[in-house]
Length: 150
Image 1 (cartoon, rainbow, N blue to C red):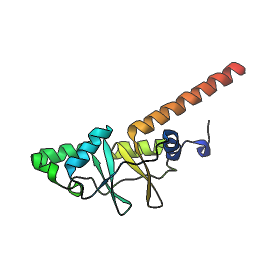
Image 2: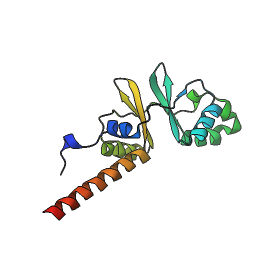
Image 3: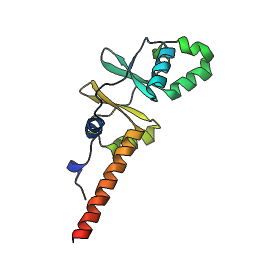
């Protein structure tokens, strides 16, 4: 069994992904532009940034609720009126299992990764499940190899 010190962290997931650019939106961006960004990038949520700080998240769910509440007029509103805030974050040393547990409890699908007040990444539940599955497969392969050589 692996010790806590050998457990994967979100930092490893971000590093494996290799993508350093974080797609984000500003408080004053019109919702219609943010919606186009989500569609163009084929993503489900973005962090909302003000003065280099994460102040919220704008998700597909926020779009649905806003459209239901305000109709087409919602699209002209600024992101600040549509986003979810306060934002729930994790650090790069958080384990995928800890993050998954948090997401399950809070019923969310995306988490900004913030170290010392600075946004260093953004992970989805899909990123975390994929990393966890890869880890389980590696452990199973190591166990098979151990059994075969014993």
